[in-house]
Amino acid sequence: MIQSATPVRRARRSSLLPGLVVVVVGVVLAMAINRVLPAVSPLMAALVLGAVLGNCGISTVALAPGLAFAARRLLRVGIVLLGVQLAVPDVLNLGLPVLLLVLATVIVTFFSTQWFGRRLGLSRDRTLLVATGFSICGAAAVAAVDGVTDSDEEDVMTAISLVTLYGCLAIVALPVAQTFLNLSQEGFGIWAGASVHEVAQVVATAEVVGSAALATAVVVKLTRVVLLAPLIAGIGFWRRRTAQAAGGKKAPLVPLFVGGFLTMMALRSLNLVPVDVLAPLKVAQAVLFTAALFGVGAAVRLRALLRTGWSGLAVGLLSTALIMLISLGGVLALS
Image 1: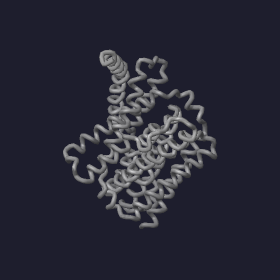
Image 2 (image 1 turned 90 degrees about the horizontal axis):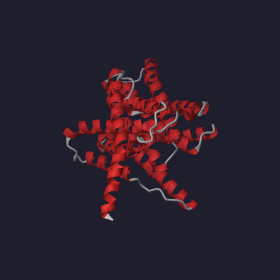
Image 3 (image 1 turned 120 degrees about the horizontal axis):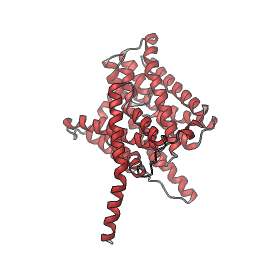
Image 4 (image 1 turned 135 degrees about the vertical axis):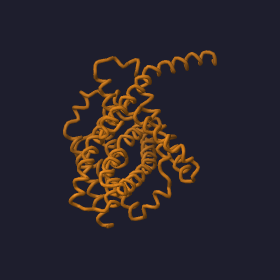
């Protein structure tokens, strides 16, 4: 048995290799695009490049195992590394009112977006992915929830596309609104961190206003990211009960990568992560997310995506408007 297993493992590694080589090329190109066009995040560029690969007429059968590995496994490792970016004291320093504002914004946006989706005819899985991406942390949250729901690739692509579209609009809209609202830098940072979808989009939005706004926005945004862990655990519990009632395969109650995320956050909070490795780990996390989004994009067929129509755009618009208004109202109430 042992002798027969070895060739199988070798075959599996070799089958992953072609796709992973293409993923590496895609990551390098996405990073290069970000260097030339800083407004385009590597994740966004990787998603588009993957979609081009998957829809240019070239057969991707030989590449499929490696692309799928990147979209699933590498993503989960990236989420684990994401936990090292945030320490509990950083969150507590925001103060209870800001923490309650972040929590209320996430909860209301998550459930309201699902209500919007049902009313406008989106599927259950697509609505769940959109709600998660818009309320928590964009593409990374969408892909993470896909890891416990096993949603259709078109649903994943639609949710990520909507996050990208409306997050980019927020980069322009919030600084323009700031000229009329005249918020303090800290107030603007809270607003941006609590409402803009992607971490990179938050940085691009807040750095226009100032360094104080940027520092506050990043901590607030990463506080939203922390809520990804209990959200995924809750979705896993719900899917587990649903599968049990239907007699199907149970989903894990708490996925392993969620436990890894919380463990890394705990290590950072206890100062057990050397300061010298924080920057390399952040780079590694960005590379892993970029690779995962390239794999996700390659699995999607644009013809099917175009059939989404106006309903997905409408849900994204309503969700974005809601999260911005709720968080802005909270900032104005706290000022």
